[in-house]
Image 1 (spheres, rainbow, N blue to C red):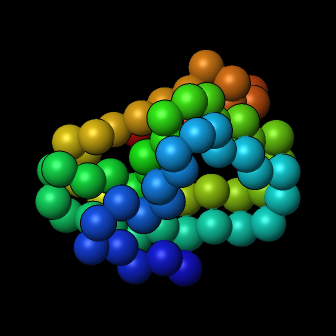
Image 2 (image 1 turned 90 degrees about the vertical axis):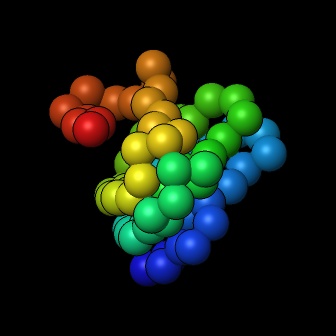
Length: 70
């Protein structure tokens, strides 16, 4: 569980996830986001739940089927 006041997960490159569980709570400041990556995000397995401000909302065309983004 990540309780973030800034970016929850901040990658200066690509983001890869192939298993496990990651929960991101925050931030509430629209200048940050629960996920921040410069390149692609590739999630091929596991569970990622990220909730926070929508000022830097991201989605990725490489997300697998049955993935929900809000």
